[in-house]
Image 1 (cartoon, rainbow, N blue to C red):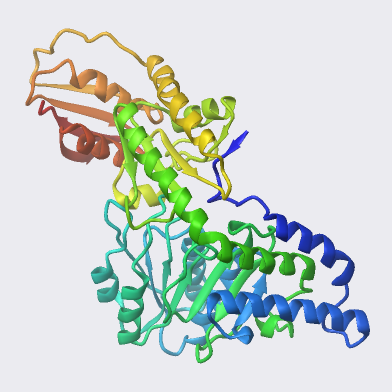
Image 2 (cartoon, one colour):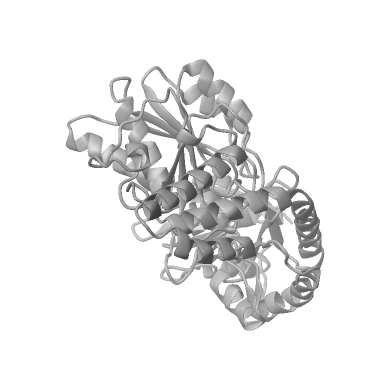
Length: 463
């Protein structure tokens, strides 16, 4: 199996595995105790903290270890919001943040409401490459803004965010900035000036179950959890010293090896971007082509169900992921692709792990066009005679993506240029995919009108 899902989790680095097994014997004791084995565990924990701080360019006493990147985000956001509650409760973030940030924002709003206050959440937009609109973000900052949150790079499409510009805006407004650096740490440095940084060890080749919460000195922070003396009173519970040591070793190794390997991975991703466009008709490669992470590429194929394509690739020996609007777990579009305004159907994310053979990438590129064609053949059609009426209606009610767009593509070929085609759909993914389809194919998206049942999406054929 060729593993192409490193953005979900990077395979465990060999040095991390060796460090973990070694520390199981040496670092099993309670690092808070003063006897020999406890002191040895404390030394290992402190050394791991020093390694992380050195890579990130921070003080070691600013670094806390959590049980995951998600927990780090939750504690970081809620802790700063609690520490600055006298300033206000306004929160600013981008619409393309990781779901952990969005869900924590919702929790902040719900808790505020329970206490009789209203916490306003401002979600600013991104462009079609996934890049943050810095001007809109800066304009959203106010005197009562308690916290701003921006990811260093997007987890679905790989676009690197303009953190340095965001830092400037936040410093000018006197607002602390939390950077979710889960996809960047171990691969790219994060510009300085942030107040809180979060990350996750399994993204850089460490073990799962270790996250980073880095809170800069001078940042007002109050733990949202009951008091616990561990991890500078920010993260409760017994530290998993073997896993933390392995995470630090993996981070040190990844940071040392990253320059050459990331250059190689970036070249492979460039090849995927070019070849997918050249060999697969009706495909949209999304994300910034240049200002991006070295290992991630995402594309969407018209007239293909994303889950079906993922399954075919799995059968062919490729492990990839999908941000498609239709999977077995959800019938809603990817919020990232929705924020970008790009196609969500038939979506595949390829994220290359360190050490991936170039031959596996070539095998993927050779097989992909045939797999897409195979799935499209299932919905092949014979054009009907040109409709005489000035407009036609496609009833796709009760049918899920990508069927509404497939039916639209069939019928629009049967009408003269200038004719209106209206699609009736109750799948919310259509609100994203039909306009994106028009953008890709050169047709005109005319209107969206709610109906008693579903929504009417009207398109004018141009070519």
